[in-house]
Image 1 (tube, one colour):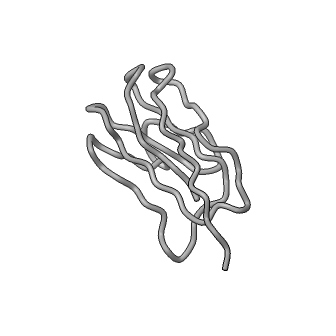
Image 2: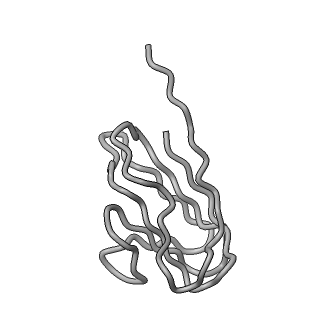
Length: 93
């Protein structure tokens, strides 16, 4: 059986209002999560720069997103938030 290794992607927003890539494309990714640990909304998107509206996914304070068990996007993951220094937790396996 294969062993899954978790890659910690925890970071902070480096520049408010500017998209940043938190994970490169990964054809071996089987799962992903991200949690907003701050008070401002965080938006994330697969395969393109995140924007503070649709088609990005929005996470309000404390919200957690986990990839579905039936499939996980393999594309890069981008995140954006208005607040510089805001913390989030993320990881992939």
